Image 1 (cartoon, rainbow, N blue to C red):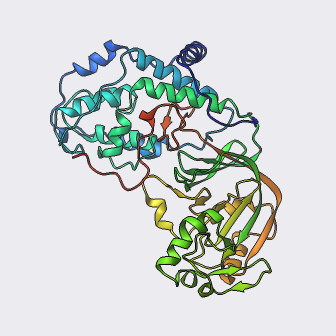
Image 2 (image 1 turned 30 degrees about the vertical axis):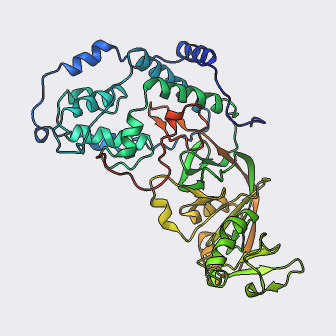
Image 3 (image 1 turned 45 degrees about the horizontal axis):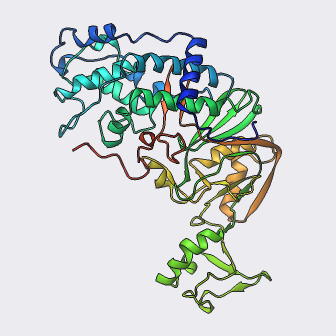
Length: 434
């Protein structure tokens, strides 16, 4: 692991030199010559949308971009190099057209002139097959292609051109090329050997991978730090799982969140099973505190184990100086959000018990059944791993797989050096373009 995992700013000259070197050293990607694009644009129209049914559409939708190849691994760098060669050819051929649906909601069944630009856009990146031809109709070919595009960009694969899908689609090809090159530099800082079993948290993608013997064996949606309280990059080891953990509120949360809530509702601590503990380990009654004082009380704010505990059933500890950890959450609905940047730095993990079952596999007697039994007792139970598992918190906003699928994510922390990559998809649900 490199001593420094971070962002290395690329000058225009360095970027062009890197791109040229990569293009010369990789396997040639399919040519996207202007003549090939013209042949599609000028092809005879194929009729109305309901006359065109793509029997293989399902193979190009969301499931087709899922891979058990990890983002970090021996194939990461050559796969991104191949993607860079492909995007160099796309950029040098003029890139792709901007899609501008105006007031039209683009989805299956619609016939609109803007669908022609949409088809061309999807054809150039390989999301739409050549045999779909050119038409103003949003047929099942286009529906499958849009879903595939959405899945590659971490968006809900619903086949509808909504606000964030349109933003992602209209990022210029040369900007995507720059994003790939920036992330290639990041990937090159990692050694090929990361540990036979290890965990990877990709912050921009907001998900967690458990990797064993070079293959992803468990993958989880995650909630990571918001822009104002960012999750830190980490190269560490997981050493402990705590079932039914106590939650001790960090000082920042006490000052920014809990004290203001107590001013509004003096019963907030009691409702949430949060106790005040002084330096002697004794409990202090909330009503004895002046919550309107200039400074927050110098006390420990500790929440009892239970269903409303901020970490719910599970806490996963790893060595780090920032006091961050992975954990369960009672707010499972947050995993359904479009973009999951909600935490104060720690990482909430969906289906965390699947992850802990895998982590504790070699730590008897902690089977899934044994853990479930302990969780029902609500007794805090720390478990040391028999063998510590490496964990990497990384910032990879663009990557590729050996099968040629290229993935992009919103540059949530604005670390990629281009404002066009911070698409502001950080909250809410995708809205239709109107």
